Length: 411
Image 1 (cartoon, rainbow, N blue to C red):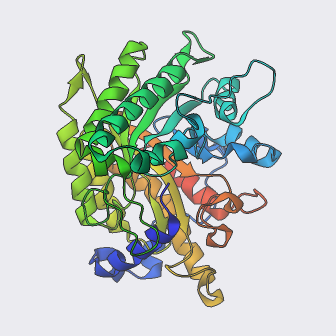
Image 2 (tube, rainbow, N blue to C red):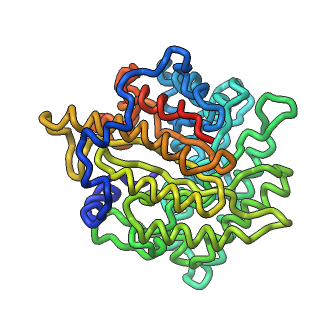
C-alpha cells in the first residue's frame, strides 16, 4: 500500500485541478443515490452472501488475529483475503536464498501461515497475493545491492533476484492447497507489479528525496522499464511450471481516480502487456484500482477510472477500498463538518458498489476488496473513520450502504 503522506499531498494538488460534474452537485444530490437505512430483512447481513456476481474481500493483518472480533469478522463477511503485509518480499524472503513461508511442522503457527490457514479453514475463501514486485517492503539485503554491487552488474543481479523470488513465491503457493474437490492452489491470483507509476504518469525510478519520502524504484533504476514485463513473464512461467494453469496476474496501483495522466499511463502499459504470452498463456489478466479515496472524491472521477480499466478487457479489481473522512493535512475532522462528511462517505460506499456493477460486466469482475476491517486498523488512522466497522468492531452505517450497493445485482 502507498505511503499515506505522499498520497495525501498528491491528492491535494491534483484534486484542485480536477473539473468534474460532481463538484457542482449539492450534498443532497449526492446523497440521493444512497440508502441511509438497512435494506429489507430478506437481504443477507453477511457481505459475501449479498451478490453472487461480486466477490467481497478484505485485506487483513495477521498480527491482529489474536483479536477474536477482528478474526471473526474476516471469516464471516469476506470470501477473498489479501495479506496486508505477510506476502510482501521482506516477509517472505527476509535473507538471501532464505524464504519464510511459516511451515515449521512443529505445531506452531507462524505469521506467514496465518493467512493461508484462514483460507484453509474456510474452503470458499480465495487468497489474492500481494505483492511480488514493489519498490517498498524490500529486505535490506536486496537494497544493499545498490551499494555493494558494481553498477554494471546491478541490472543482471536484480533480474536474477526478481526471477528467483517470483519462482519461489508462486511455486510455493501453487503447490500448497486448500480444501476442495479437486484440491485448489492456495493462491488464485497475484499482484505481480505494484505502484510502478508516479502521479504525473512517468515511471517511478530515480531517487527523489525532495519531499523526504520518495525512494524511487530500484527495479526501474537499474533494469529499466522492461522490469515490468519481465516480472509478469516470470510469474506466468512459474505458474506454468507448477501447473497452476488458472493463476490470474494483476497490475495494481493507486490514483486512477485523481490523476488522468497516471490513469492513461496505466492503461497504456497494461494494453502493451495484454497481447504478450508465455507458452500460449497471457502474462497479464487483470488490473487493480486500489481506491483509497476521501469523503469528497468526485463520483465522476471514480466512474471514469473504472470505465477506463474496464475498457482494457481485463479483469477489474477494486483492490484496497477505504474512504477517509480527513482532508489533506488534517489529523481530525472539524466537528462542524463531521455529520456532512459522514453522509457523503456513506453515499460513496453505496455508489462505488453501484458503479462497479453498472460499468464492469460480470465476466470482468474480480471483486471489491476493502482495506482492513475496522477503523482501528486503517492505514489512514482511526480518526479517518475510513472502514465499515468502528474501533470496537461494531457495524457502522457505511456497512449497510455498501451492502445495499452490492444488493443491486446488476449483470
